[in-house]
Length: 296
Image (cartoon, rainbow, N blue to C red; front, side, top):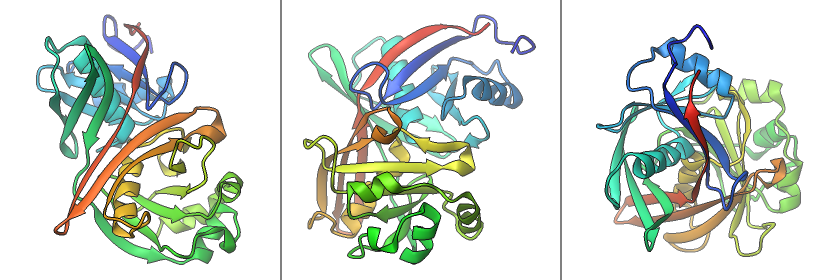
């Protein structure tokens, strides 16, 4: 770290999709202002060792880049929401209701909701989803180390894309979801033959009865064995739920819990609607500031 040109570069640590401190998904946001090259940003992301680290290369234009400890991503959910929160709270001089972040994938619209003067929720709009092929239940059962009977056969296993390709796997119960363990050999074979490198499993049973679904998300390919909260994959899930009439309707407004199995309780809010063949998807939640300082 001492070899990098980091002196005086501000950073923030936030918890995204968190109901309080030390829950949700951690994010480091670095105000780089184009002072760092690609190698330096990747080195800092590896040093931070969170699921992602974002770099605001232009505060004025809202230009943002996202890195995991291993690779740069064109898009990711909790980094987008967490970075928008930092910009709004630390740099915007007014209580804006909307903004647009410029990511590698393109512009992503952000919505801010307030309770009085306090920013209570940050939301992002998802791109129009793309639905790819279906996958056999026995194949995913082997990858997830569960029984084929644990998978909810009423609904197909499908790859969905709104910015990150994700395999959506419906399970029957919380017991089935708790059993999931990634078989690395079979996972590696699976992702060699599909665009999707990540897997989201979900079930209608929840730890907190006020919530609608429980989710687990796995992204070993990107150096994230299990993510406590993922806005990108939950956007894919929202599209899937509407597409397949999971709740029996083409419009949803639901609460999704994630991260319970790894001790980082998270809450994501999903809204989605299919209208005249077009999807409208937003994912939101709370962001909590944990710390701020300067890189050494």
